[in-house]
Length: 130
Image 1 (cartoon, rainbow, N blue to C red):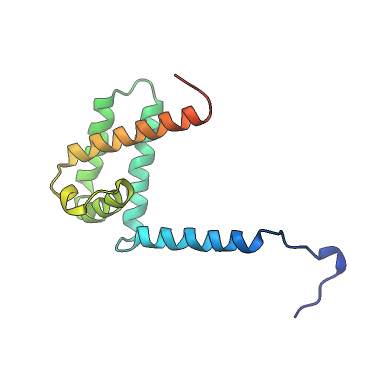
Image 2 (cartoon, one colour):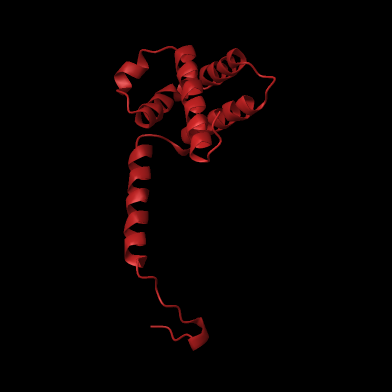
């Protein structure tokens, strides 16, 4: 045990143990979600999603342009299609086999719809009814 000066003593919060258990559970869920994928594949998919979100914020981009951009990125990284499908099937709770039969354009459309839905849910939670 390392001695510390009294002014550095901290009384743990009452729910500290519960917070640690919650954090551990979240980390296990993330590990389960990422199982079977590479850090590079996850990062690229994250960047594709981020780019689509930025395009949605840009009022000059149409939905067709956003879908085309997502589809182009998915086709560019065709070698990572299996990883992308695995992650997306886990996010969307869809059978990976069914998702593997879908074209890149259809995946791009569904991604856009999910992003739009997520944005609308966030707005409503914040009280910005539209």
